[in-house]
Image (cartoon, rainbow, N blue to C red; front, top):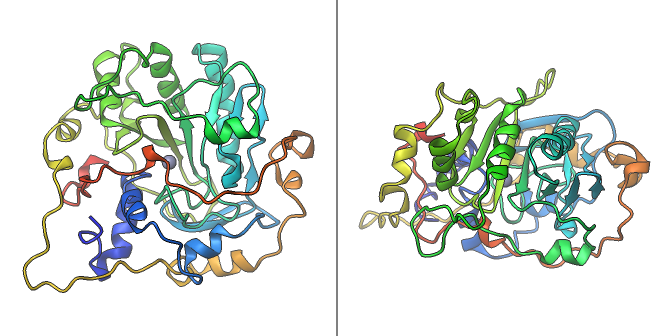
Length: 357
Ligand SMILES: [Zn+2]
């Protein structure tokens, strides 16, 4: 797969496509590299920044190629959410994203029988590419939410690191929902998330999309926002639109009209998306994938890196310092690619299928 996406001139275009297609689409090649990013790479630089910039929140660039200023942190705990994997330091986002997560957590608890959200990765303090796990999540407008309900107790930092993901898929079956873990509340949660006008796309596993198509009997107006994607079987990914006035934010084409339950979904249930990549043509020069450098990102991102930081995490926590986390977070361990973020080894990039997203 690395070879398939590594035509040098197309790499950046592919990254943009990957972003258009979902969070984990090139997680597989990240996993395949499994090495520390080079010291000068954008991943290494953005991944080592501990605090966001001061000042107004602005996304720069595209979901899969950009950065941000003025990020705020989702408090590690709220009445209806708990942030997970705190050591990753990825609970930063545009205030519009953080506000939406809090709103969704309340609405889901009040109306959908979903006790609260476990929130996964949002973005790094200044966004940018990540060492592992995601192609997008770079401008503070993407967030992962677990498909596991919040437990009734407040988890320790250790539990938040180690609580395993629960897949919604049946083992040893092809794209089949496991009825022992899936519930109507999952369906209501997804449709609640899709209901907000600022939400542009929600990425879910094709099996989840199909389940929704087959069983959702309520208003289907927003069903088309649920987009089938590799992975995304133990969490879903919320992407919001560029906030009003965010001139440096590159919007994504809106989803096609309709519920998305037809041909584009059926494609996922064919062999094509799961076929091993074609071998390179005989005699073709192997092209090494080139790491993304800061200079590949929008120009503003160099200034974003150089800008002065806020004074502390507490000062930049959404809702003010009083909402800041009380947990002491252990220093980040060597990050590992979460199993559900990695592509299946045989997963290709469906480059001939621009319509699927
Ligand atoms: Zn994601």
